[in-house]
Length: 227
Picture 1 (cartoon, rainbow, N blue to C red):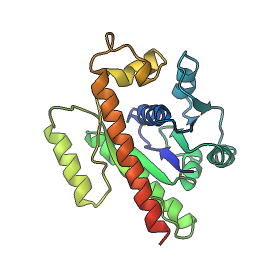
Picture 2: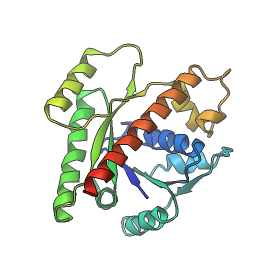
Picture 3: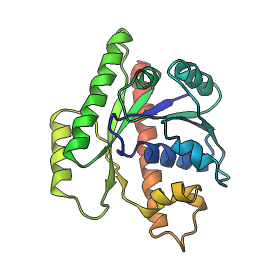
Picture 4: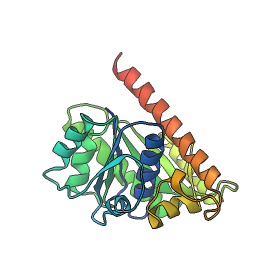
């Protein structure tokens, strides 16, 4: 079953939000989902301590020595396994990447984030060499973007990614109050009260569109590998 690793050496790029939004959306589609929280701050473990009824398995307390075995064990039990990593280029991060069917690199539209994301790409290529030629698919995801207005810097970063032939998801994870509320209230998107969270239907639609694109990419990648 697919292992989806969320990686970027820079903290605050939106890794945990991306991870939890994707996992929640798949769970509401009746997929079985496990989420491995390898971030030292344990934001997903903290979310799981709330009252959400979404059937998402959350694993914490993983270490550099256990991360590979934990990923492999979960991948035999669940349809989708997500790995939320710390914001550093550590050995734990490297080992998790070796197990990925796809790596998502969240990136805010800033020069600093773009430079750090390039480190994540370099790390993926290093692990590919260690794996004797096995390709590790990856894609860049722009996060916290304005759904209505594209900034000049955002357009510049998109152009730079395209000129570097880096795969960029068409769907962006927009700046939405709901994506913050799931951590504050420790609930799923579909469990939030729309009278208390502005733009909730739009946030759910954004998440569903992102999941649809991700599934299409993984299916296409699997089809190419089987040839």
